[in-house]
Image (tube, rainbow, N blue to C red):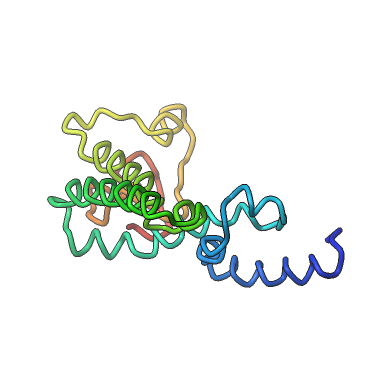
Length: 171
């Protein structure tokens, strides 16, 4: 680091928050994103990663409880409640950081992405062409490693969407 010793201590403190994916909560106690930049930390941008990781920690549980039939309604409810929460916090005079950084206040964008994924997954025509299918048609071998977010059932697994092999966690 090219920080003075006091800034290094602050950065180390922020690193502990960031490593637990909760730095957005620390920043929510502050004033705003702009104010956070006036006393810069090299880890300021990790707040959005924390929001995503908190979402990905809870979302699979919501999917299991809600089931696929009610998932669209859950997405719409999350978007509405998130927007409503931000409006309520703004009207009640809360600090900008308390409106900007917490996961419940950012949930509308994540739920919108989930709704888009559900819509793509439930395409009745089933006429999407995956990159794996294009590569396979050109004679390449294909493989998928990592999380697969299209479903647990066999018809949704990567091997049914053009991949020759798959190693990972279906969600």
